[in-house]
Length: 205
Image (cartoon, rainbow, N blue to C red):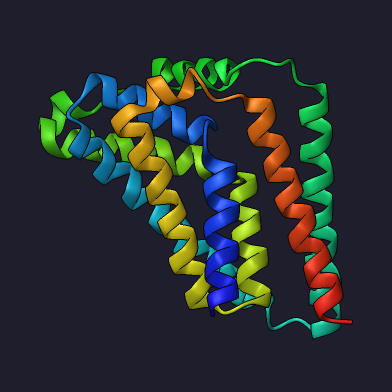
């Protein structure tokens, strides 16, 4: 359980820093009360984590040999792609992710004025975060971890990692985003994926 918790915490925390979801939370917190933005974002990320773990548990019903091979291939594949992406990135901050988040917010139809500021802000934050997180690499990482490890450990670790990133984004996102090198974070994430892939390969042989 401790291994699953650690894997979920590290992979999610590193992968989420400075990504589109992080930037959406940051920009929303600059417009609306931070506690309601955090409530919506945190609920969305926790919901996505639970759904991903459930999918992972369903996948775990497959033959163990196939499951092990898929786990190793996915982690190594994700890691290799992230390292390649990092290699091709300029040495800059996460401005591209901020621009993508700003574009998402411009296209969104905001709800606060329609259903009340408090619930509207939380619901808008939930919806934007949930949609942005769907299909993200961290979702697939959570599914993969949950398929081959203790689901409770993965769930707790992944949710904690998401909450840490959401709190950083809401409380000081602009300052942090301006100092984060997307290239460095992507490279670290790639290395973590490769490490966990190698550990999975070695531990099951």
